[in-house]
Length: 467
Image 1 (tube, helix red, strand yellow):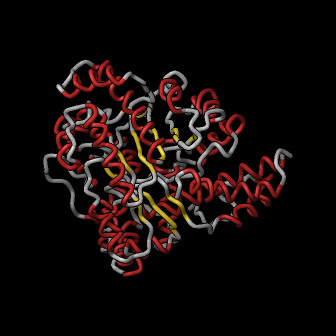
Image 2 (tube, rainbow, N blue to C red):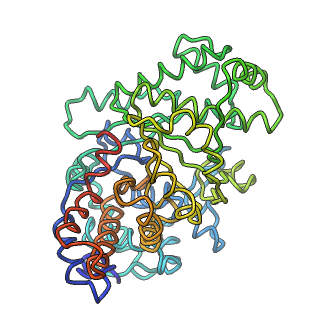
Image 3 (tube, helix red, strand yellow):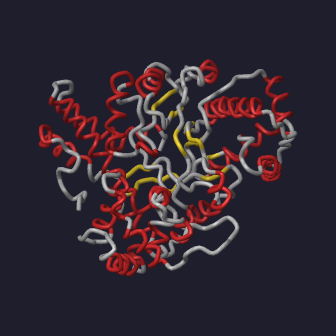
């Protein structure tokens, strides 16, 4: 088994000694997790996690998409159906199916993360397969019943300084309120995700706008009232620690319409326009509006474009969102972002973090843009590229133009709480290996590499996300 306890994991032989030294200085730094999708309910209620399958398999699209690609039905893995039809509920059976297919993850980052979890969190020292499935399951199930494996205890054990969850604009944030009022010292903040009320193609969009008006006391039948509703919700989220908003648009397209034109467009969208061009234009305009609001209220604007969400309509209809069928697309930034950048791109007090699933854009578009516009930063390798190879490519293609300080460190962007230490550990190892290579090529002094290792592992994320 390739385990993260190996001191040389991801370190090239020719630079191994320095990479080890750099890593030793940062491996135990606190974890700053500024963007992700863990459930605030866990920290609020602090109840024991459910069985191993419900913790590690059922909610993790990295896992079940791979198994589905090899013919395992999602129902067999316990993934809930929209219609409430029966699915497998026996955690042990789900775990056995997973274990039988664990070989499918050879060479993937998921394998690294899971092996780290098995060994470092649960003390398991044998590979997972069909023969060892029950022993793994029994060990993990027994540990999950202990108080030191409850969410808050693991939060502290993982040395998490702060973690941001992500909630929709209509969320009442009751779990965050419970955390805040409960006296626990763990820092869990929210982030504003308004997709359901800015994307006309989001299911229930019109009803969502009605609900937005109800909870804010604003007239979301008018453009002015609609924008004011966003301002009020953003202010509400800030009461619960939010320092960022997050926007999962299909593209990075932006627009900067006049007030009159924006009002007219909103009126057509509010009436249920079926014109695809108008719906795209509205999303584009709303990214610029969100950027202007961020300039005013200080929330960091994250743009996560380029995913064709729910690519399989059959799976979406049966299982809903986030079931592994979000697929990367080619993404333009230079032309798409120009209206927004013409409006706010030179604002030094604004931070816009750009992510991509299109690696061809790193050197050609993202790094040159972030390397000159004060408002822009390049987000780390994300989602499909959250891997040793993806992280290396990211550093190689962005550093030459944007440098290190126009990037924002690492974020794990995960729903899989137990894997957070593994993900950060891999990122720290990759960055230390990259820095060691630059020193070996006489492109950095060794003391600079040590300073940068800390920045990439810890400081840049705190600065960029204002944490």
